[in-house]
Amino acid sequence: MLLFKNRALKVSLMATAMLGILATACNDKDDNAPALRSKEYAFTGSGNSAGKVTISEKSANSVQISISLDKSTKDTTYNFNIFKGEDLTKTDTAVKFTAQKSTGAALLTNTTVTTMSYDSALKLKAFAKISFKSGVKDSVVATKKIGAAATN
Image (cartoon, rainbow, N blue to C red):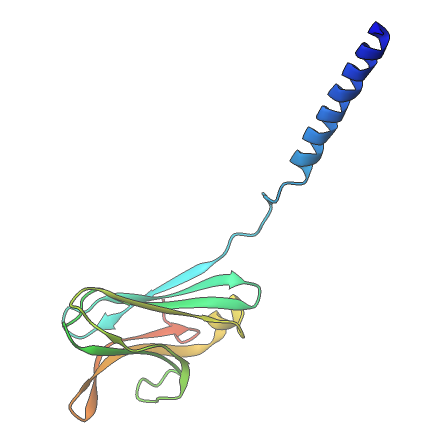
C-alpha cells in the first residue's frame, strides 16, 4: 500500500510540473512583438492656437490619426480635415473627421484608417487643417503639412 501511495505521489508531482511548464510555454505574452510606431507634427496656427497631428500605427494595415487643439472658443464648431497635396489652398479631402462643438476647452478628434499602413501614411503628401465657419467662409485656425509634405 505504501508503494502505491509513493508512486501516486510521484505521478501527481510530475503531472503538476508538466502542467506548470505547459501553462508557462503557452502564455499570450510575446516579448518579441514589434513596437508600434508613432509620429507627431506640431501645428502652426494663427494667434496662440497650438495643437498637433499624431499618426500612430495600429496594425500592419491600419493607422490612427489624431488631431488636437489646445485652446478653443466656446460654442464654436470646429472642422478637422486632412487634405491631399502640399498646396494649403486645395481641398482634396484625404481624411474627414467629425466636426466638434467646443466647450471652451481643448479638443481632440481621431479616426482609424484601415486602408493604409503606417509607412504609407508617412509617404503621403498631405496637410491637416482646423477651421471654423465664420459667416460664409471658413476661418482657418491652424494648418500643418504632414507625411512626405512635412519639413520636420
